[in-house]
Amino acid sequence: MSNASNSCFSMDSMDSMSTVEMNSSRPQVSVSSSATSSRRRQNQKRQKRKFPANGSLSFPWPFLVLALAVFRLVKLEIKSPLLYKNLRGETNYYTSKKIYIPPSLDAANQRRLSLDLGNGNCKWQPPTYDVPESIDFHKTIIAGFPSGDKRMIFIQMEALAGWPAKDEWDFEYKGITNHPFIKANYPHHEGIWGWGDVADQVVMMIRNIRRSMVEYHDILWDIGYAKTWEQANEHLGNLYTEAPPLEDFYAWRDKRVLDECNWYGWFIDYWMEGGLMRDIFTHKITTPEHWEMLMQPTIFTRAELQYDRVVGDKVVTESYDPHCINGDVSGGCKPIAVISAEKLRDFNDGPEETAFIANVLKNDNRIGKYVIAPEAWNCIWKELIQRGKGLPTVYQRPGFVEDDYNFSREMLEEMVKELDRLIGKYGGSAWNSKPTANRIVKLLKVHLALIQRELGDVISGRRKLTSKDFLGPEERRRLQVKEKEETGNSTAAWKDKENKDSTEYFNDLEHKAQAAKRKKRRDARVKERVDKRREARKLEQNRTRVEDDASPVKDGETRALVANKTKVEDGVSQVKHDESHKTDIDMPKRKRMMQ
Image (cartoon, rainbow, N blue to C red; front, side):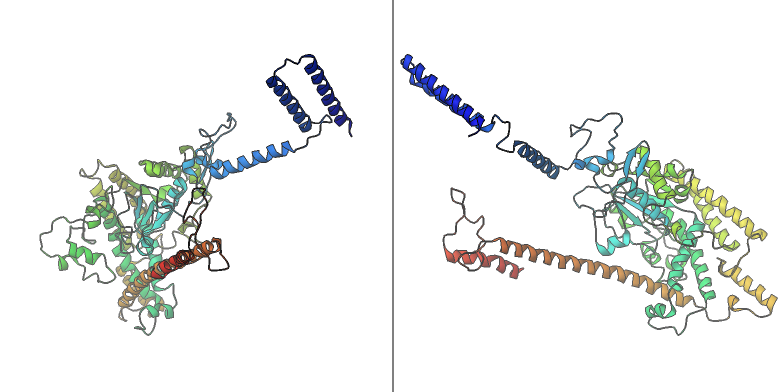
């Protein structure tokens, strides 16, 4: 026996002897006092067993304490992760002036959003593409004439607020979702009102008309010559035996771009006037019937769309797009702000334009509460524009040069004419008290000065034109005649006009290409729905299999779903009859068969 044990034994013996002596000398001590003394001795023995004299522990208490601490930490982290706490109000962590805890760590901002690192620093992060349906967003339409600059604007919004944008066509063919930013070309024929009635406000993107026409050329090129002849002719049902010459495409493109100069101003008028129906080419107020025809320019020819032919001498009263008068945009179709694509890319004005976009979003707290702190706005602009973060834009396209094409005098004068009309209209007394109108006038005056300078270069001959440039019918015909006179024979590049006009071919091709685009999006939506249904069936099968595997098996018979069937007072579930037991098994199967 160890010394510690001997000591304990000696102490117990001494206590016992002392107690006997005390009891013999004082027989009058009460029973309760003796019992209390006995319990005290037993407690002393327990304490000695727990803490032996040699200092060793009989139970790993430190390990138990550590395990309990780890268990509690894990439990708290699962229940409420640290990143989901407001570190400045919901925790007891001490923060000194040396520690900055940014707003991006608040509970409301816990997504893959851009991080405000403090002191004007940030880190761009992609938005959360899986948008919960339960959040009440204030949703913004980014409306603009077809070009790549709307993408530049909505990626600014995505970086500032952390939520994604969605295209109007995706809304139409993939279904309505809760995306807070909507990219729209509507009412241009390249767009569609696909978002139903979920929008709340409109911002309009303005871009230089000349640059917009260059990008529209890219759309037409994709239709006419980006594909092989065999691929293009598939859309036309083999109506044509050969592809027209490239020169024919240029001639057709020029006519379309001349028309698009009118579409450019018509687009601005539509949104600024809250959906008022106007003719594209005369800008007169028109009828709903004429409006419907104008919305389908690939079906009707320019001659068939002429105002005098369709409307004539009818008395026309103001009519508005039903989407605008039926409240499909809760705040109305008129834009609350006008955003400049050129300023956004400018290294001097860009940060200010990003701040302008951020303030537009902060007008309503339903989206404004997600916007990153103002100190980080300048950094967001640098991340996206200077460092090229986010989705690629047209300016990051390999080999992209915006001045690849020149415009003839005829084409530039058409642009000047349209810009003069818009500046005169929105600079007039009926509009000049509106901030949006004043912004349009200010931006368009800059664009006008640039085009007038280019027009001077063309007139003086400092800009040399080639067949691929935007010439217009008159200039192209003049150059054809000049080429024929100088060479005595028109080359393939300057084909004689007497040959077959290929306008019908390209119009048909454009119509078929747009139909194919709609079909492609429609097929994508159908496929997405089928995939979702298939995934739902798999989940249901897996859930049923798990439930069946978790059910108890009685006497080797079929599994029984008896959990939570009948509770007795002691809390144990029991099944009273084998027959009812089998019925419970078959019930879910019958329900699935009925479904």
